[in-house]
Image 1 (cartoon, rainbow, N blue to C red):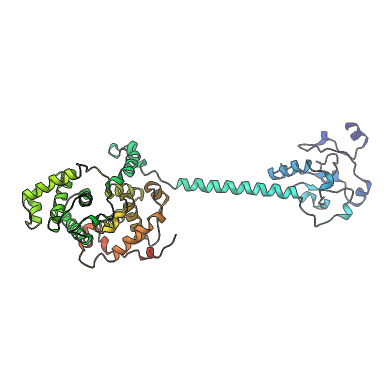
Image 2: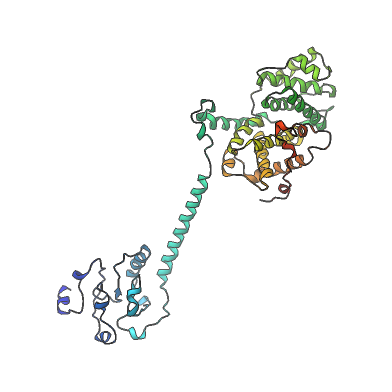
Amino acid sequence: MAGSNENNPGVIGPSHLHGGLRAGGGGKFMGATAQNRRALSSINQNVIRAPPYPCAVNKRPLSEKFAAQMANKQLTKPEEVKKPVQSVSTLNESEDCNILDVNDTDEASEDSDVPMYVQHTEAMMDEIDRMEEEVEMEDVDEELVVDIDDCDKKNPLAVVEYIDDIYKFYKKAECTSCVPPAYMGVQHDINERMRGILIDWLIEVHYKFELMDETLYLTVNLIDRFLAVQQVVRKKLQLVGVTAMLLACKYEEVSVPVVEDLILISDKAYTRKEVLDMEKLMVNTLQFNFSLPTPYVFMRRFLKAAQSNKKLELLSFFMIELCLVEYEMLKFPPSLLASAAIFTAQCTLSGSTHWTKTCEWYTTYSAEQLMDCSRMMVTFHQKAGTGKLTGVHRKYSTSKYGYAAKTEPATFLLEARF
């Protein structure tokens, strides 16, 4: 073909190109074209020997999309392609390759359809772009989960190396600390209302003795587990509560109240011997098993995940102490109670349903899973200062507890839908 270039100086050979494309096929420019228009050689020096459908190419690098179109085009039969035509006068203004019909320029059509293979290629590339955007969005969501232990890596007391395993164990073991939610059915002389009065009173005793938070939660747990398997008469119910607090103090406190103090707080309703006898009965009935995860251990971890401040912390503990008094809340496991208390407190303070990806990751509960428990907490908050059981409300209405009980309930949660 090189010889044909020498004989026909009107056709520019590949040796004159810089970065041009070689296209298959032969053909020459017609003389009629030269009569009506300027010579193509004076317009663009990148024109190579004309293929069956000549193409004028700028020196700009081809886009990936156009390269894919050209690759598909070479596989298509010429007669199957409908040839769009563009005026030579606008050829220099085009940034992509414009197909030029030399043999039929006078009959060019402005309304040329896009070939089907081009549509398919563009659709495929658009789908790839969309999938990449979805993957990027998923990566962003993953980045929203904060490593809450990163700041404690140098603190040996935080046991960062073991903390995840510890809480996985707590999640597995929490079922052993639960009691049947309808255990009062086996009791003949006491009921759930008496249980609520007892625990409300013990919350006040706990507050007056300035005991640790862990002690209160373990006390309630020991009472429920004991009553679930042991018949108790009404006049001994307060004795069970006092003894449970004594046992919890021995397990959690550094300085334990003496038996006489507990007898005094009970208005001397029991003797020292009765307290010690009940202590023996309880520890044997419970088989000395006091190492159980209560809602408190989950509260500390989940509050860290929520990146809480003092106000959120106090309101969360107010919510969960309201639940300690309510017998119907025994149907929820400790981890869910703790998660729902924090969720409800966050919603109360923010005025909207607020539950981050970090909270969901560490608690393993979504906002939807917490909603039923959270709504019950809102109703308890509404009536906390009314009725006879107001011990928790009075406790959290003091400056020491940030007046948490005076916060307006998140009533919008009662109608929220997910």
